[in-house]
Image 1: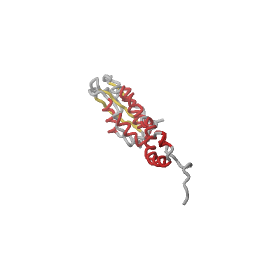
Image 2: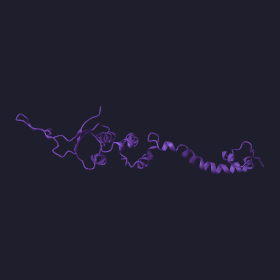
Image 3: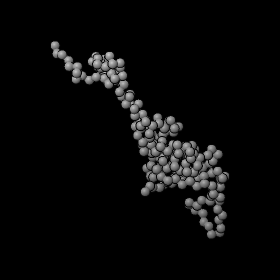
Image 4: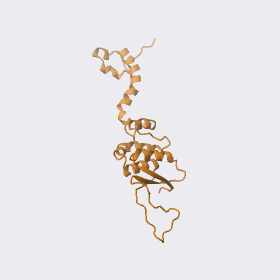
Length: 188
């Protein structure tokens, strides 16, 4: 019958946590390998837990979970880099929520293009030489709390108007109204 050479056998690293009387026990070393093989992946995950809180490093399938901590709803149709940018920018966006800059930043992250936001302007007076035609705009005619968002959209873009409106609704002051104009555009 062959004799096992226990001097070259693997021993569990958990032996160092046991009293000295058990540290040289070969059977105990092999027995603890069972638990070590189960717990090592968990220990590795816990050891690198900080990477699960960094939007740049977290695995893609964890992005919705991380976004839920920040009360963000990620659109799964967005490119991965835009979802990561939104999570990275969440604190800054919350800080600027309800402002022109905050809304423009959020829309830029979602669409990838620069939105124009025009706040209330009084109507224009037309004299006898003025002509009305396509593209003529005579002011908002609305109250002081109305603004217009002009958003260039690429042909074939996956930008959804209802999602853009939901972003505006979530970022604008509650008492304000808006007009959304999606115009054909292109990014340089």
